[in-house]
Length: 274
Ligand SMILES: [Fe+2]
Image (cartoon, rainbow, N blue to C red):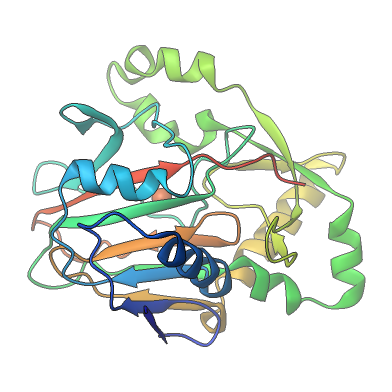
């Protein structure tokens, strides 16, 4: 039996009593799916798994989705490498939901720590369900009917501005034209309503004047980042975080430069938000 220890009021739980080197039983799969949906991000400690085991674990929850811009582990295109060091400081600074530039953004991601800095390098998550539920009823009603545009180009503008960046990412740009999603999506399992805009990929709210859209998005970004909707996780080598990408945002704490940090991530395909 797995044991679930919540770490925050709004979201986050540590899971004990499971060895991810072993194939998951159906009962374990069911328990982890329930814990993921309820706690929105779940954490595991001391899981010394191979790339093949990480990939096999992810596949029990859905099909892996490759990332168009990140390097990957040799022989495992589904295992993205997120690495930073003295020469390559982390470029990800903003709160975001992963890959909302896709028509069907990921169900979730499974991130494993390979190399952790001696100090710092935590990751924070926030609950988009708790954030939505804390809004006033008139605001919730207003947001419920709206749609927003999300764009790969917007999210990767810094990489695209680098010398040769636009050439390197030309195929990713062509493959990922802007898409629209509801501003509030319904979680397909829990039924909870979740705010589904993020400052990394969302460009505008459809139908509003630009000034209205900018002001509303700015308010929503500030609102979701309120401390009571967040939790924080301190990594050790072989820690794993598995987040529900339908109901959360996350952000790394870039407080460890020039130390090295290397993470490996499998992202699981999700369905079209509604
Ligand atoms: Fe991310």
